[in-house]
Image (spheres, rainbow, N blue to C red):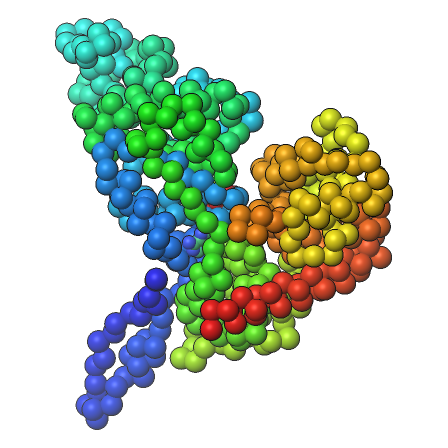
Length: 470
Ligand SMILES: Nc1ncnc2c1ncn2[C@@H]1O[C@H](COP(=O)(O)OP(=O)(O)OP(=O)(O)O)[C@@H](O)[C@H]1O
Ligand SMILES: [Mg+2]
């Protein structure tokens, strides 16, 4: 956990033995942080980074095992990138990141990594000897382009060629990456095609073999739940060579810690009643905690560390204003989540996403089993069997449907991933509105009321959860 840093100022005394006024004021001075450094809803947290020991330990172990490839997986917003960023900073690990987009092939990934490595080699040069590496490639210089340009006076007689013109193979990539001391981070791994993912096992094998020469070389693939399985399934032999690490949603205690650490940095005091609300509404998502905490500060005109010996007291009553801001800020993204998750790819009888979601909401329960959804759908479709329903409900937990549902393995039931999404869907489906007119005042009012009820439910569950721990 981050500690608040206080500048140590040596105090000087005047002839009367009293501390200089200026000195004593400076003694109180804290380091000033800006609000957007402290609460970071759309960036990896650094100042308020809360280390999750269990996951961190497993990640450390994997990084300390030469040749071990890593797959970090978990729901969107669980904190995968944040954990990686903080680890890389604390351990000075160099990396190249390739971000996947839908439809990318593994070949595209390898080319992207090559491009970023900026591997150059000397093509022709007078009077300089070109060393050959084992592959017979002319690679007298690789690594940063700068190192080539700095070559004493030879740059004018040297033509350089990007390594992209070299045979682009995973073997070459591993070599260059290893030599430059980088590891390869592949973000949003779930976005590449399934059959391409299976090829990943082969590339990981190449990287694993190269680790004899470069012990810290590895691939760290980051993706949604189940990404790991797809790689290992293809090549069971890789099972022991890949560390599959789940980054779970954040616990309520972790979320609380984000606020506590943040308020320390800003020298403010957020009342416990607000902290509890923020945590309850976040449903394990750090981004919601950061954003609500940020807005609470903004509403209270705190834009940087409050410069006073006494912490600024946040007024309890300002929470609602922050919540309104949150809704205004997020209404577009809620709208796109709605559209994305309910779009029809193949029309199905009684099993289109909207019908499934309606059935879940009709049960009026916090979490529902497949059996309960089937029973509800049968109310309007008597002959409905629901043999394939599980597959379609599971789809709603995936990034392809904006992860609007979560699955609880213990109770084998599904629930909405957060109260904001649930309330929005409730409102949209109850009103059966065309999405375009949702921004009208009436509907927004309805959303706000529905949301209040949902938030109240979330808060009750939160309090109950805490009772269990007590
Ligand atoms: N351990 C943590 N301590 C404090 N804040 C965190 C922590 N982990 C995540 N956050 C915050 O939560 C938000 C989401 O984190 P992050 O982007 O790392 O998630 P992710 O799992 O990479 O999501 P995605 O799959 O969508 O890329 C960010 O605002 C980040 O600042
Ligand atoms: Mg991420």
